[in-house]
Structure formats: structure tokens, C-alpha cells
Image (cartoon, rainbow, N blue to C red; front, side, top):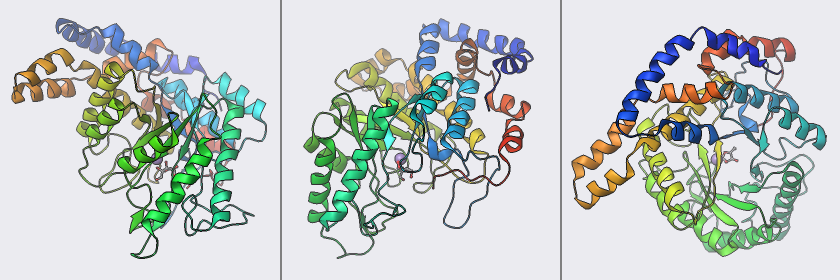
Length: 426
Ligand code: PSV
Ligand code: MN
């Protein structure tokens, strides 16, 4: 299914006048503060976030999976769904494939389809946390860290296969997330597991093309509940440093113990030129996969404040691979992703409003109150008219959720695909 751009414009037309009033008010107040609105709008338009191929169906919990029907049952249909998101929001111009859930059958056809929807192929993700059909070895007790060499070799080879698939599509990064760890004290030798992981990652790294990145994701717990081999950013950074200059740390917002200072983590990784990728989601307790910005919007803003600082002041850090990594089961997945995309843009826009020069001055004066005022003034600014303008100028929807609903997209998908389709993923 493809959205006809005229239908988006028709829906926009009803709200154009009120949008213009809101935009003029925001633009005037921000201009008076010396903000260059056009630069902010351009930056918002350039900020594209990859949609993970596994988030387009209903997410499952251990206890159940409740479909919204009309789920994509093929990679083509998943890309079409990303096309819908991109047409409405103009900020979802990439897809991130998880292998083997989404192995293309016909590479040229997939590339043509993505191209026609203005979608690029972002990082490819390997999967050594599930056993695949017909696999010789099992990952029950770990993959790249496994004590058995044949199992490690199978996992290494899988990652090489994923690189080859990504290469054919134009991806430029491989993301490795390992479930490896242990559930009980004594189950694993920490040092052996770490050393095996390091050696395996090096073997993969040696096969990473020269213009690619290897992104090493960390997570403190789940599915293992006593220890995880790559448990935190420090471990990921150690491994990336061991591998070499094409290897980077990937931060997933849900992969931290409660109250971790994620903004400080991203800041220091950028200083060291080692922040390579980012997975957005939100959580109340752990890796809850909730909609971005739905629980802790101020924390997200503070993280973006550091990301913006890093993007402007740390040329040693490369451009990041941005991706949403959330999928759960009580919202229409496309509506959920639209909300996440909006929350990301909102936090980014607010961070762009922070007056860095003034903040630096207040920091030098040890004016703690002023520092907080500067940050909170930016956070409290209503940037939604700017986001709408950024979308509108590119042919997107003034209000993506409203347009998605008024065009009745979910029902069209159900008519086209039926009620029984199940998207691959978790
Ligand atoms: C693991 O929790 C993770 O964040 C990794 O990025 C996976 O690839 C993804 O979720 C999907 O399972
Ligand atoms: Mn992730």
C-alpha cells in the first residue's frame, strides 16, 4: 500500500490556517530570542530515523500477542509500511533489517521498492539469540562467548552472512547485540566468556568492509538474569577499542539500570569518538519497549542536549545510526511509531534551542540556577509548530496521527492483507 500524497495534502488543507497562526507565533517569539528558525527546520528535516523491520507487527510479551490485523507478512509489505510512516512524517527515511527475520528474496525488487519510497537501508542486525531452523548448533548457552568453538564459529559465520546481505542492499553498518550471559552464579567463567566474545568480535570485525561500522550494543540483563557478557557501555567500549577504528558503541535507551545517567554516557562516548549508534525507546522499569518520550521526556531532552553538543563539537565522532527499537502490544504499531518519531523530533528541536554560549557562560560563573533555567526554558518551549512546518514543507502531514486515522490506513491494510497475517520479529 502506498499513500497518495494528494490525500495527505487534502487532509492538511483543513488545518493550514490554524497551523500558520501557531507557527507565526512560535517563529516570532523564537526570532526575538535570536533563534534562527530556518536552520532548525532544516536540521529537523535532515534528521532521519530508521524503523526496525521487527516493529511493524504487534510486539509480543512472554504472555501473549494481540494483533492489530493487517500486519505485514513479507519484507515488501514491511517496507511499504515504513513508506507510509515516511510519507506522513518525512522523518522515517530508513529501515533496519534483522536477519534472519527479513532476508530479501529478490534484492533488486526490494531495493527498487525502497528507493521508490525514499527509504535507505540502515544498519543490519544479526540474531544469535534464537536458534534458527536447521541450525547445527544451539545458542542456548551463548553464541560469540560460548565455550564450544563450533558454536562460536557458527555465530561468527552468521554475522558474516548478515554483512553480505547488508552489502547487497547498501547498508553501512552491522549491529551486534548478544543475549550471551548466565542465569546463575557459577554457570560461566566471566573471563573466558569475555575473552571468547572479544576474539569472536575480532573475527567478525576483520570481515567488516572498510566503509562500514561495527556497532556493539550493550544491555545489563534479559534474557539472562545473573550476568550479561556485554553488560554496559564500558564493556562495549573496551571491545570496540580492541576491534579497531571501525568499531563503535551503540546505546539503546532501554538498556540501563534504573536512574543511569545516559546523557553523561553519550557525552563521553562522543568525546572519545566512539558513539556509533542509538536505539530509541522509553521505559518505566527496564527494557520495556515503550513509545519514545512516553515516560521520561525530560531525560530524552537532556540526552539530546548532549547529542547536539557532541554533533557540533566532536568532529572525531562519526554520524550516528539512529533507530527506534520498541515494539509492544497495546497500540497499532504504526501509530506507536508515529508517536515515537514525533517525540524524537520534539526532543531534538528543543535541544537545538539551548543557547550553548549562554550555558557555557553560566557554567563558568557557577550560576547553577541559570544553567537550569537555560535548559528548562528550551524544554518548556512548544516546538510542535516547527515540527509541523518541517513536515509540511517536505510534503508530509501537519498532524500524522490525525491523517493516519482520517485516511483509515489500518482498515485499508486489513482489507489488503487480511486479519491473520503475522509479522516476523519478536
Ligand atoms: C535487544 O533487547 C535489542 O535492543 C537489540 O537491539 C535487538 O536486536 C532488538 O532489541 C530486537 O530484539
Ligand atoms: Mn536495541
